[in-house]
Image 1 (spheres, helix red, strand yellow):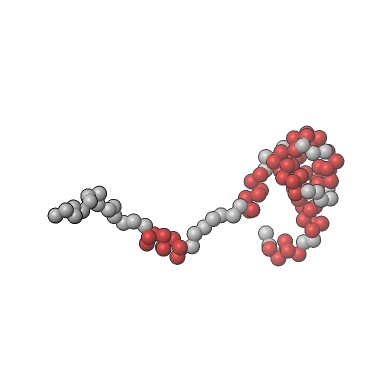
Image 2: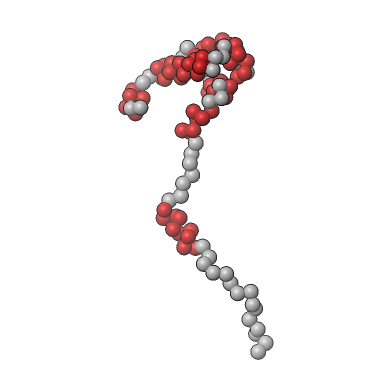
Length: 109
């Protein structure tokens, strides 16, 4: 997907795309609007509004996506923790290389 093309889209166009995705996913799963609305815990009219690109709340969108068993679409929002090579090298340098002796030095001699 061309990033410049995505940035040029209006909010309305993006909402319409999201609504189309919801509708197409629902139809592929052979679910009625009423079935999906009940599974998501929302009103059918809210689902109709979302599918038509009329907007809605983010929580509502998540509820619908969950009911469609499509939560994998949110993978792009996960923040992967990574460690820089320099920090990794510092940690490795500080790591113990040998065990210390368990014998105590005899100071009485």
